[in-house]
Length: 195
Ligand code: SF4
Image (cartoon, rainbow, N blue to C red):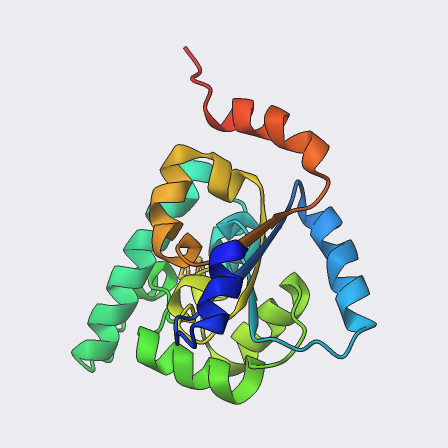
């Protein structure tokens, strides 16, 4: 916070994000309700799992590693079909391919047009994703250059594996821990090994 204030006084043009964290998404929903009562409308994004944000219905029952792998495969196939302008006929290939994943530039354009300065929650992200055809799971990372408020559960920062993915968002950010009495327990979970 202090470096942010000092930077403002020095007139630095560094982009400072606000990362607002709580233990669960239902607690974050309370924050969104409170935000709705204010006139504060930053461009925002919500980090959540593929289980919560994936739009590809055929992956609906998959969980964890299986879902991650099916998503990776779907994204690759979708890109290949689009890039090569293939009119793929094989229903199995079409079923496996995901066409929601877009390149970053396309997502940024959609975000600026439809989502900037709008209060978002998981349902709105999914609705927009379906309407504009983009993946809400990848949206926070793809939109990070113009997003200034990120909502996420603690484990995104306290789990060392997940943390490595978000390092550049965290730099120069103000990180707010809501319900901070739960942080130590979440940190222990994030740094624990199961044998
Ligand atoms: S890119 Fe998004 S919508 Fe497509 S499979 Fe992965 S998580 Fe689901």
